[in-house]
Image 1 (cartoon, rainbow, N blue to C red):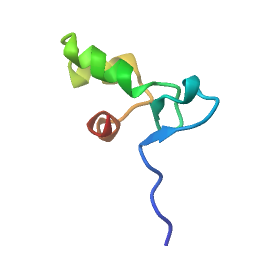
Image 2 (image 1 turned 90 degrees about the vertical axis):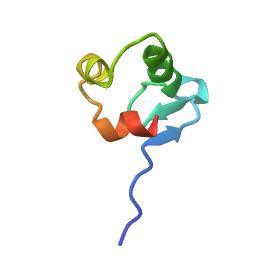
Image 3 (image 1 turned 180 degrees about the vertical axis):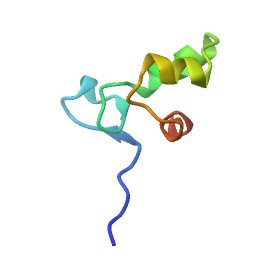
Image 4 (image 1 turned 120 degrees about the horizontal axis):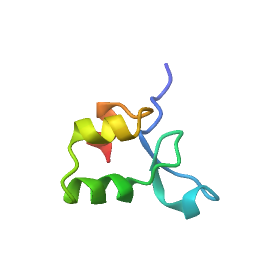
Length: 59
């Protein structure tokens, strides 16, 4: 049995080592700031079609 891949990852050399959503270059801070500015989960999923609701929950 394998351990599931973490949804939030820090990878040296990718986005300056910032925490990003798994297998993307979408920094967590981008999603957090967008929510603070009033973007809904539906908006973010439309803006970033590679994301799923669990990614937003992890961020």
